[in-house]
Image 1 (cartoon, rainbow, N blue to C red):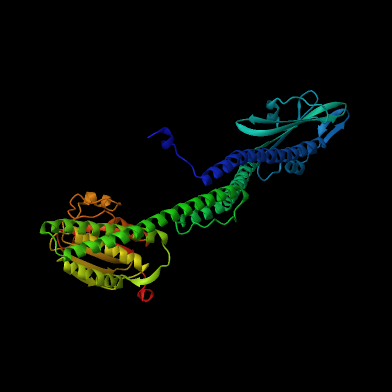
Image 2: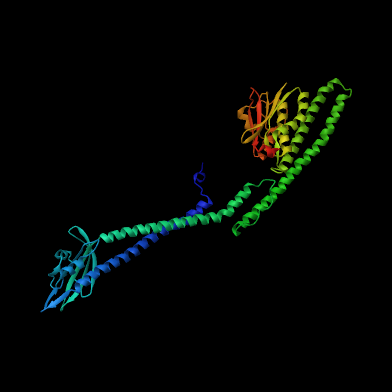
Length: 463
């Protein structure tokens, strides 16, 4: 197997979905990252602003008396500055020389850079194994600049980041699902004309070669035009083939009938006994040729109306009608023919089914050997109506049965004369009735059982 045949091929719908989803798979995560960064930076700036407000509140408490700077903080004010439902708040005020004026002295270990008046500095820091968000502010105290340090733990910031991540993931996931669904729906709707065209082409056969309707998008109209041109060529070719077969069959039957009449007259008239075998052989050859012409006419007639004018019928009635013609022939040839007929309602074309049974009976009489016993059965089950012809001849080996259903093919054990068209025509007729033709072993021992199975209809419909 070549590399090209091993390579997986994708349908048009799969290719469109891949090309539609590839940008989504890239754009949606990128949009999620950008959205998360924007929301995170905005939320952090709000929290930093709140932390800065605490630093400004502390700066507003700076006082100067007699040239000395102090922080006017009462107990309630200290508790108010440190109040937070989630995090712990620390603050520290350093005088211009860097000495502690008031607050949490351990914040001095952060060694934050000194700020000018009204200049801010925000950073992440670690103190005593605890992660903090710290802010430094330069505040005017007298004629110098004091440093105000404020810090808080990261509990609400971490919770906010987790909430933002969940919100962004849900939002982006929903957007991805929505875009994927929209892409699938757009692809499905866009390819519906192709699906309808495929279904229409699937139902076409030689009996339905009328032009396709152009109710399709503009992109498909050249394809529709190409199909219509192909249908026109097929229609002309099919008509020419059917005319040839029908004309050939008709042209053959007239001289063959005249020749058979002359041979029959020759056998009735006084003649040299040595000519008897010659005339018998000529008679057999003419009969085979006439049978071949009849089969060719049957092929032309079957192909002229594939699947057309089906009517409710009963396979039992088909067998009874064929029996009127074939029972005398069977008795004349020394065959024993039996009928086991039960109702078998079906939908089909009666003349084609009669031709099928006639071909199978002809094969049975021709190949079953001397003193053949032939049984014709009809019946049905829940899903199928069946018609069988069983003989006691040599049969066809299982490995050759598929080949025996082809045109101009015969089994290796066949001793009779024939053209190899009978079973092939029967198979064509069975397929035109959405059924199947099976070659089976005879139920009573050696021989062949040919079974036709077609979809069953209700008994009322058959009647």
